[in-house]
Length: 530
Image (cartoon, rainbow, N blue to C red; front, side, top):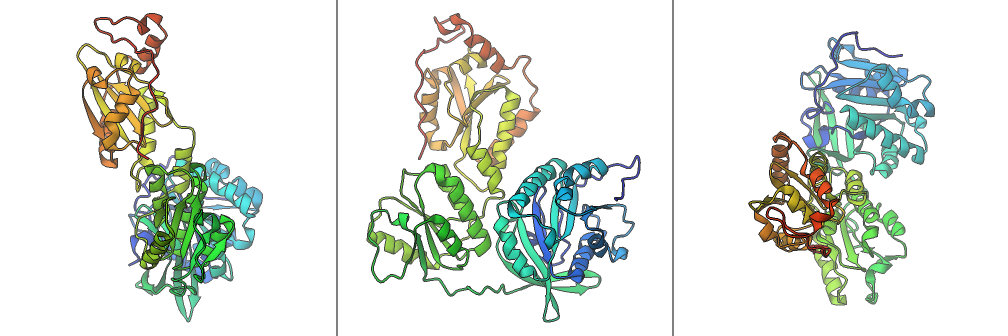
């Protein structure tokens, strides 16, 4: 059962850049939602859900269209105040009947078949008792996120539960998949909106509470002091993973809490507020899981929790350090550390408050950083797609790499220059367009570009090129990408000519008037800063 789009009517394509929950006077970091994301809001009763429906469905020009999905009774509650919807043409409904696991699993296919929604705020209203088990819920969320990104939508999961505060605690365990968790409930004859964490284009924000009042048909939010039972009571507490001590002796009479396994330390830290928590990092392979733990703790417990990471294996590279800091780590402690230095760090960090912005989407970044990555000489369209993906993961992170633009020396074509490159490291890629070479060096810092170029070229790059330009930050790489997309394609992609030249034996011998010889030796792996 659903409201179909009238035949011949155009799809609503209003972008979601300004989409909000509808609160008035609420800071943007808690009010806005982000395209492609999933948020969970818990409601204490039908009255709370009805208030949310009134806010969300108010007919304001800047609000994108809404699609209400779920149980027929709950959709009715959301649309109880029909007068706020106006003509109602921008708002659609899709009733899931019968509600259950099969309906949730087939939801995206059913929506595409019935409505083909684009650029909408989708509200999935269900009873909390209808939620699947955690593992199945994770699978649904991953499927929904992919669908949301492809359709330019955002999903608000509206859960009805008698104890919404308890339910929010349960939902916070899914912070790797949900971009925000909040609840709307009544207390002391006053409506309250409590946010546990919220991620959008404005930033990543921790817990906050607002009182909600109806004024002139709109709902205004005023901030309240966020109450937490552990607030400011554990600032002197130190919790450590035992491995983080490495060879250091355990100081006597410190009262430190020691944990054998990092999972045990994580569980205890999830109940802390201002304590100092010390994890151990043994290798780069452990970084993804450690990053997830830090990110979860910072989201759930807020900025006063001190999160330290002790290197106990090899020294981390700059981009790895940037990742941990952007996931909520306060400091990284080096492997070489004296007992007195450790005590000094733990004393110094006690009054520290975390202020660094968190990554917008950790899982997308980890998939890009640790998945299969491009390497070598590639056609320009593939190179441009790689740069676009790279830019999506550069926000909030530095040290991701540099884009080097090289101008071939007179008499040398881009294809000839490409044959002198030995680019094999995952993440390093090269392409050519309009007579110039574009080389991306992953993890390389601007001050090491000259060293890296000497390593990736078989001959001295200064003899092969007349100049080179280094783009090392989001703005300059983004500008260069826009310029490349506007540049007409070459009649023949130099990358294809490069492949043909490598297949000809004569291309590897003898110096021709217009062609450099190949050195024949494999260049060493380019040095990168740590």
